[in-house]
Image 1 (cartoon, rainbow, N blue to C red):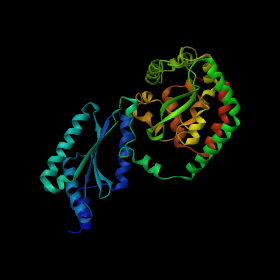
Image 2: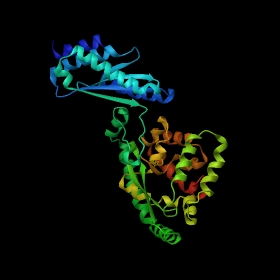
Image 3: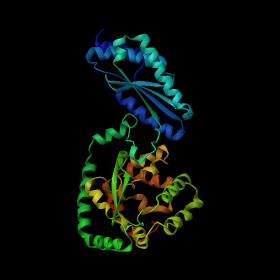
Image 4: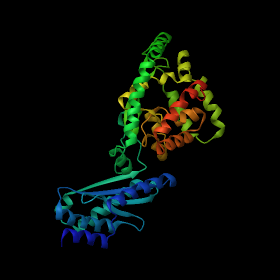
Length: 371
């Protein structure tokens, strides 16, 4: 049987989604889990060192094995045509996730052993992906975005749009101009920070950027040296978990503005006016941030996120200012902050960026919700 006939036979006897449809299904089922609270497993099967007709024959056996273990709601398809085939298993109880993964792999190995020769079995690569992804515990072990679970994001990353080119150009020109124009102010602030308390003028900290890539953010130091970050860790946990409780709003602003003993007197002023953020113009010039975008979180903030929260660090490069900063800042709940970030990320345009940049000075002068 020719390779073309083999592919047709596989498609007729064992319905297999093509690459585009299967990847769209991965995205759709991932978003469905974010709404339902259920989990999703994807079993990915590759054939090593196979090509041409041999690959077609090999994947015919893989398709039969996957079809044999799938349920009525599971989906079989190509992640990469003639290279990687997958089985999506949706609507899993998160409590049974580990058991489901073990069962799927065991059932597939049993089926393929019964249907294929030893040579094919030895050339198979078997991978399992689960969503929501388990969060890792340490800053030194930050996870990257899994291209198998976010195929649409990687497709966007590989396509450089006209908007991205213009936005990057605006970031370079804008950051250079602002660094030059504000250099006297930057030097004055540096002197005040140095005189106010011991420690470095610039505070550097690991933050999470677009596609969950860590980078070192720059700020003017607003805290005493060797400050305990446990206070902020506890606050973040409370703020995210209590999101949506309207009665907490005033408590949030009061806590952040007046009750943090780690902040120096000059630090309170810098935070209230957002002047502590100015060194991030260097991050913008380096391409780690943009002038406009969501604020980059700390790794322990990311650990508190629900799956849908993570999209604020997936879909847009982090920025110095953004829609949240000019409309609500810390006066709003965390969930509403994420919704504002997602609204910006999904409706980005140069005109939107310009409007946010023009609105930023007024927000800074008012100091509403500043911290």
